[in-house]
Image (tube, rainbow, N blue to C red; front, side, top):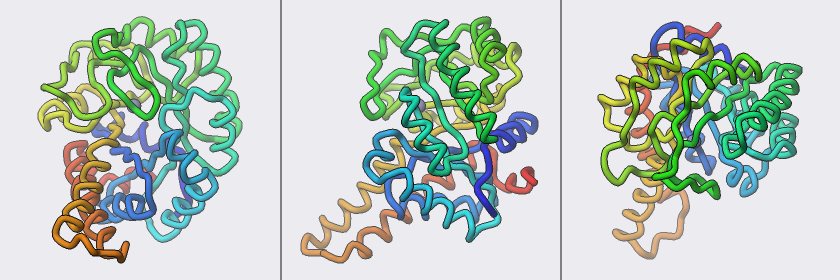
Length: 288
Ligand SMILES: [Zn+2]
């Protein structure tokens, strides 16, 4: 099928108490791995790329590959631009064929975040695609966005309600204690805050920093209303470790297929495990 906006996927997830797993990919093999996982799991799928990956591969190459993948499957798929603070880059990706974008103006004061997000929502509505925005600051490191974990600010439930109302945004990533990258200890998720935000806002909520959150905490977050979980770092590590293993065993290997196949398999396994945690297995049929 053709690529769809992530809005109907996330609404179905929110309504039915599960989350859609969203995977950051950087290579064709990583894309194939998560598509194969979604097909096997009969799960809806959100493929996402960071701004860094768009700069690395090119929005047109990414769109062409993801559109090709979607044509070969009956699984509903969306292509999402992760954490972007650059309006021109967002327009570039929409024009190329992305069906979902994140405007991350969380570094700005509230009023500026509202104004910037509203502007992206207006364009996205004209194109029928999803917009995700962030309130508060998710801790950790992602590409070149660095937030001091100690200073990471959590989202205020009242502000979330006002923000959604004033921006018309389709999905919201409130900072609730998760961080990007791999956790040094256990993440300190504020579950009461998730519940309070869920009660005050009608849009699907997004859990960032899904790498390394203990299974029980993911399940609890989803049960409280998280409708999308982003996974990036764990996939990169699995992909890279599988390649390192090949070269450790056979340093003279020079056929990319020989190390890309195990790398792809490693990504697929992680993707399947995350889908299981999100509860989205078999949910592809939820989206017409
Ligand atoms: Zn994130």
